[in-house]
Length: 291
Length: 277
Image (cartoon, rainbow over all chains, first blue to last red; front, side, top):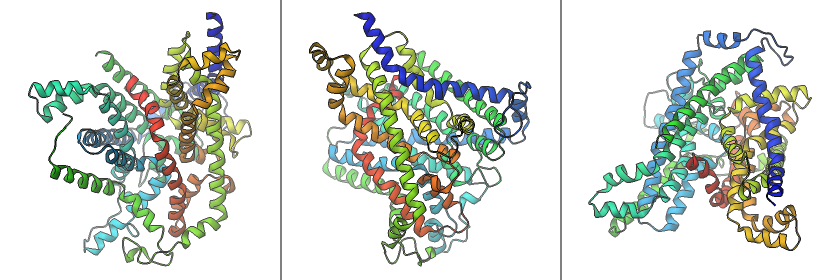
């Protein structure tokens, strides 16, 4: 009986695992191969045993540290905004004694930005921030302000504009996740705290945040790692420009791979990103284990 | 801190405040919807909102051959990817929900690791593979890539769907002489239909929204998806806003509506990853 069960279980997971093996495990090995051995251009890749030359070239690139810093700013800034705003919205929706139907409607409306196609979000913000056709620029002109408003074309502001767009789009998702964590907190904890005389802020500091600490940390880690690798918004909004000021690692990898066709070099940059992701994940998961 | 009592005037304040906050939050999108009715002859500088309203722009989008073929291509790719994800995900999700077996935990944590692999690296390898297999500039690598990146979520979500169904149902079917597979197909799946449909819909939405693979694997204009067609339209020197904005609205509104219907079925599967950490 037991033997049959084991067999059935493996048969059922086999198709999915085979699919993963063919299209995920094999390719990740292939990328490692590219990053270590492939030099030159094009897809006719022949191994050159030059080992770390791709990684060294990336390291020696004068823009390397700058793009790393920008990626850190983009991913870190967006993560901070997602978590802070998501937590505030979720908290408001969770604690007020308003009608459930109203709260549910609000939650649904707040989710809309996350349901919009990223390409359309990028187009939307390119229009909003456009120096001629954008409503903000038109408004500023109508009140007689003399500033030129077009942050996506300005080296100083482009990266921040993309970061805020990202925050607008993805905060709803984190609100949703934090809200479902808040709803899972035992109401008895709050009742006990009220009996002990804790006020609102104290309850947030000593009950709410400790209860969802693990969820927040996991979310922030997942958020940081996925935003650092997020390509769509930046590419459609600025293509990494003006003059590289909003370039982040994924757009750099894309440029190297699909505009210069240096697949080995591009894989090496991508591997660095992946290694950083793995390190961040391990650090956060370790912190969780200490609980 | 679950506030239980609050004077009515305070409640009224919160109702108004939250409504205004929600409207402000989605106002960029509302602006886009209203702008889609601006006549193509009216200059933007005339004002933030259109002075006269027209539906002609939508007619122009519907008559535009390139946009319509992009919509159809997106539909084809998203529908096939979602179908394939279900075909692969149903048995796997069922297996994780019902059986305990050696390697189960390892496989499930593997599913959580897969999404941390940068999509851009996947794009490089799949691109090189596609070129070598002669599949570049076809929709096949796109469908496979979409299935691949959405399969982990599919399996997680279907697992929670199947776990919510009691074992006795299929056990009694097996007593009556069904095999495990027959019980799954004939008894469990019909009950799981709402969960299956919403998982399908969510993968459909994500595949429709996908941009990176779509721009990497396709070069011919007729084969482009709607995301790549719109993204290249905004990058041009003379942007035809009166066509691009209504096209953006047409490609998002149906999905937003669909998303609102299915959201309560997928929250559990989404939250799983963050709380199980």
